Image (cartoon, rainbow, N blue to C red; front, side):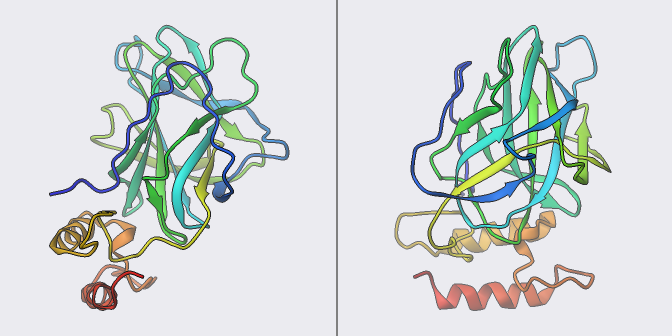
Length: 248
């Protein structure tokens, strides 16, 4: 089965700027001028001599499209400078399936202005109104700080000591980040696996939807219901109708 929305892009210890193409902002909680707090959440690799801190922050996309740029105030502290960011689906209020991974070596040695920018090729899609998690991970002996936003915006934070096998969640002043997406039409909803080769819609999209439904991912809430249980037989009917209508 095809893996949905997978991506790996290397940043090799330097800032990588997005292309000049027009973009929409799917999420942004920086203050004016991309300001952020002096406080932050620690991100440690497994060999850092402390707990293996992996941090995740929940957000809801306000625009649809492929991710072209991430702006994150992740500051290298010491030892290895080896970090990555993952986009994950929402699984009933905790980070779910990995939808894409972005960059290694994204910490910024020495001076820390501006925030790190990580270019992406638009392969990983977000859908407006859908909830996701952005996850910061460390490798080796890496130690870093993911700075909080400066506008006192609270939300759900999840942390893990076992690289995301288990999570603990709570409402806090969340970290700062911006998710930029390519402008243009929203992705076709029933194309769950993000395929581009014809036929765009096929049995793999049914399998992808079933997996999302089983994982409790927000993507599977096709009818955008809010009353519990949010995932039910009506979402299957909705997906079937969307599939039958096809992609433009």
